[in-house]
Length: 549
Image 1 (cartoon, rainbow, N blue to C red):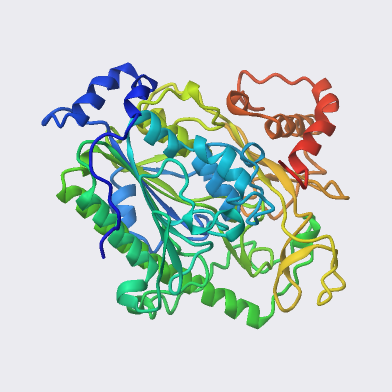
Image 2 (cartoon, one colour):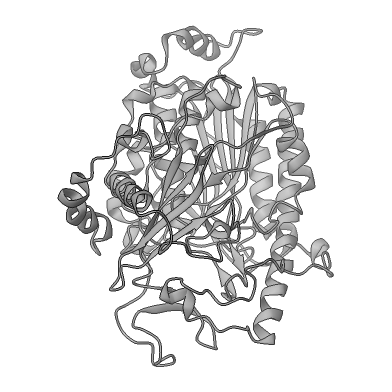
């Protein structure tokens, strides 16, 4: 398979006007790259590999032996990597923009929630980090795979829409599939069927990525974003992997198939113990998810080998991560994401590249809003010229000593659903969605919450508030209770509770540099309780508005 419509090599038109946006120290390197000088240092290339719904807490990296060896063992593994929203579209929007959901305004997977909407295209897409890489730093940019869940919708411009910033565009229409899908190839639709040898999407993405490496321009550095369907449902494994992991079952950890006592009503409504059919279903889903990841492992191996063959590997940063986590039976919720707990908000993050020592693990608290600033930093772009909420990970990757870092990140989600009662589940509150046959529902319109996830030398905490009639609060000490079974909101020190509430409100209204101000456990933190009362209402209205734009 060959990538269609590859543009000729050389610098993009007009990009010389923006050379000074990249650091002057890199200007000579940029010019030497364009003029084809040999033997000189070249600006690094970057590859971002993004999976769909791959957890970290429940063993999601276990099947990926090649990936762990080729990326993790050759670089750094982050053990505390989080997403600011445990759902595909808002999380992917955070990766692209470097912003929290309350700043990019993508709140769920619907067009109404701003997922690939006209508003998103007009306001956010021109300011994504790939757009900056292309227009300001002269990178050739390549995208292949799932973009945003509503991409290609007729009301959002259809498949003809190619977001600003992408030199080569090979995007899936709407949500993850493995067969019988349509791709936008630089704005032109191509349908695929169900012939494994030519249609299996993970392999198609691998092939088209290798084609890009073979036929790209040699006069510009490149950025590649490869976004696989795996391990998202429908969990269709490649034929050669469909009989693997037959003796594997979902982990029976302490929060598996137990009632969510003292938790938000949506968690409390789950039936415990789960039915045998539900357990069989989630075990089968767990097994199939692992099977689909084996093709991702093959993709990574092929990509690394091709980069090595072309002489690009030593000058290329490779990031591997997921858009959100996943659960299979935790607190008796069969399968999904969207919840505030570790299994849904914590993701894998592995990075290798120039200047990164092998076999390292970082415990620093990082989030996917940091990916955009990091990649721009690698390219030499002045981060002060962006309004991104995240921080560059480059100092961590390069082993900078005495590094001042954050102690907390924000997690926020606005539930999906309509404010009506489901006739099949009349005993439940209005607005439930993602329901299983026995009326165990994974989401609701008022499953709307915001959390501060805090890590410091002394504390490992999570503080969450729900925007509903209960104004429910959940607090967990993950040092003593890593499975988040006991909600300590009513027993924690009231002064600390007040500080966490204050910090949550500050983060919910932050933008750019103010998202990086000191947290409760940072030395520079200052607590002004007056702001809790003067800002409380406005912050709530702005964050939880049903019409965020």
